[in-house]
Amino acid sequence: MNSLQFTTESSSNGVIEREFTVGDVPGVLWSPASGADRAPLVLMGHGGGNHKKHPAMAGRARLLVTLCGFHVAVIDAPAHGDRPVTAHDEEEVENLFRARAAGEPEGPIVVRYNDHLAKLAVPEWRATLDALQALTEIGTDGPVGYFGINMGTAIGLPLVAVEPRITAAVFGQHWPDTLAEKAKHITIPIEYDMQWDDEHISREDSLALFDAFASKEKSLHANTGRHKELPRFEADSAVRFFARHLGGAATPPARTDV
Figure 1: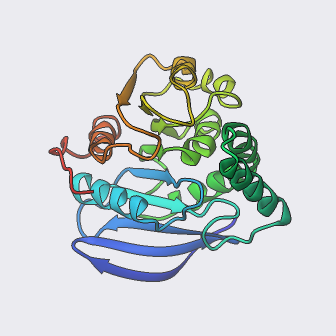
Figure 2 (figure 1 turned 45 degrees about the vertical axis):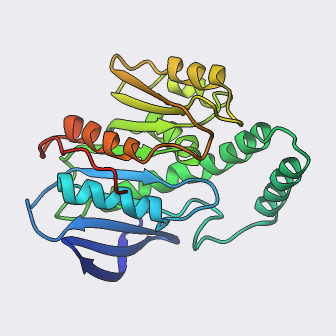
């Protein structure tokens, strides 16, 4: 098993930020500067074209750390952030840009490429979870959640489908093509975000993926707006969701500044 190696550490406003590697996979762990010896862990998946320390990741992580006292970890997906890019990656990105410029549907390309990335990333996430749980402040007996939208769903949903240590998840904004069958194996509590006016993912596709989850407890959050207009208050909702299901913290008040 690959061990976790911390490479940098900084602290601000009650949050410790530590970059790490597990094998050749880089990641970042946000933790409370003080608090309980053990705390729940939330794994977060970033969106396509972004990276582990994208402002959306850092902002959501700080909410979970400061309002709930959780640990939050993000790793760079294959071909993202500090990861190497292959010729196949470059070709798929070129295909996407070409379709976008021509006004053609992006979905088939994104679905195909994200499925490829998920096959690589799921084993990396499981190895990272092993390494994180070896840390004294996290341990193997604490609850684990997953939070990922867009490509974070494309990678996270297959991960959650095979990873019994994850007991609650927030997903959203992806096509059902390669994910619906995997969603049928997921029974943990789910919160799912969709944009009602999404120009890329139809309402029917969003509802089909939500419907595929076998979870007895699942909530659909449908907001008006286009694909990139997911309201910031959905991050607050996700914090309250994880506070309910991972325990160890009171339900936080609503926040709209992240």
